[in-house]
Amino acid sequence: MNRTRADQPSGAVARPRQLAAVGDSHRSLNEVVTDALRHAILHGQFELGERLREARLAEMFNVSRNPIREALRVLEVEGLVEIVPRKGARIPLLSSDEIAEIIEVRAELEGMSARLAATRCTDEARTSLQRLLEEGNRAERENDIELLQEMNDRFHDRLAEVGKNRFLAEFMRSLRERTLWLFKLSGQARIIETWREHAAILQAVMSADPQLSSALAMRHVKEVGKTLTEKSAG
Image 1: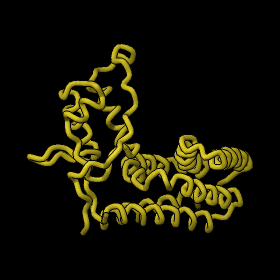
Image 2 (image 1 turned 120 degrees about the vertical axis):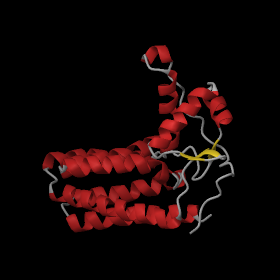
Image 3 (image 1 turned 180 degrees about the vertical axis):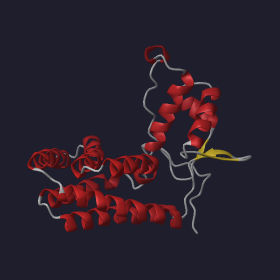
């Protein structure tokens, strides 16, 4: 099984969002730093297997190493960070087989979500999905990558709402949050392609075609999986 090189820096990393003033939020510095680091990981600002050096993170967030150390411990429990004895913290390493297993589950669940949405799509829901489609298509035409990423995120939530299965929606939201950092590794170059695939799914859902909706959703996840597998083998 192939694994990524854990000790190589990923190159340019986007600076994490500005830390909120502790006094403004009435939260401890540890909580604020943990949230900021979690956000950075979930939004793909680190590579698979990348070392998370305390000194570098402290400089990035402009804090001492103590809140960084506490944040890493919390995120280890959440599964977002792996702490290796005598080597420190890093983004978890996943083999090609492990990525394939995640994709397998995501594909089935996304297919079910799309199928339910197509089956239960009311006129009101169809109008809402049409607005989402038009807004996303406009963002694509204007090459607004930031908005397009937002539309891709909203796509999943909206489809789950239309499907009207609370248990599936909650389980998928949890799984998506736990694997968001992994899917972000497919790179910004795929954001436009991802939206186009989402747009096709929306069209199928609005046409009340459950089989096509499910097939397109599953194919979309598997295409993302191919990109991730290539990265893990690189």
